Image (cartoon, rainbow, N blue to C red; front, side, top):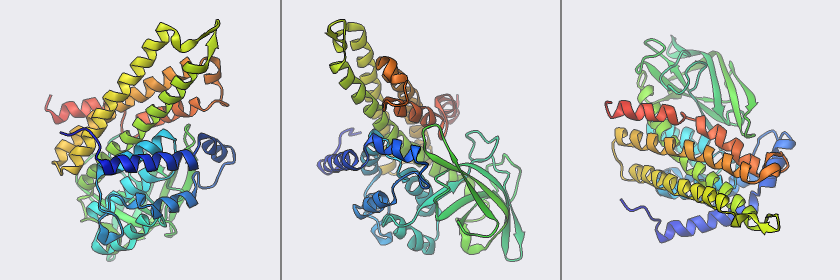
Length: 382
């Protein structure tokens, strides 16, 4: 497996890096947080990313995209992670967009994916529930038959960017028990649907999630994403792909924290000496570098597996490997970065703290390293 970028991907990397450096400095994240910005990101930048073709990288040209691959998206996600850019690539493209791309009807794809590719529509996937932990198949939200359609009732938690989504894709149980793999159906609901209430919440990394309540929400056959009772399999495929994409963002976050730290080590003077010359700190910096390189190999492997069209089981294994590696590495690098900045690293005024907070949240998103290793063991029949 070739673990290097092509010339075109290197060009995309340079373009994305310049864009992030010029438009999304870390001080913007601080400004969005301190001002309690209603969106939590820039809609103007999101539309500009759409004009650059970035929000439609994964989508076929028939749906307004550029029809490129996951490795191209990895390059972009890495640079967004390096700058901690809060724009909703994960929620809109990798979660909501992939749900429609993999399971939606032709009408749904034409209507929504073209608008996502243009940077004019935001999506969210509402699949987590209280007590579900990382199990995408634990669904208690019910969808009961009502005439020719369904009536949905229940509550979803931790819906990424749900407060700004124009369209929410919601999982609901149409048959079976709360823990059954089968009997789950996905519904695409507009945010203004009667009976659907979205409450904004904030995480420690200043990113936004939402609490979504469904109180007798009416849905018709046109709202179905895929076939009834088969949404569990689709949901698992979507989350595995989003997990691999999140790992690319986490890799970028590691590199951003590492760059800040090495710059500090090269300039901070203590006892009349630049602290980067101290052997103990050199060893710690070397450990950080090794962790980023190991993570890069796992992340590139995951995206190659997706681009090669491997089986769902192979994709699941790659997602587990990448997420376990990145969860541990990002937290380690975040901790080391703050410690090596000394006293200033512990203050809110210094940017390095944003990387530690992002590491803590990303670590548990879609499952922490312990969960991923346990799942990998099950997949390998241990």
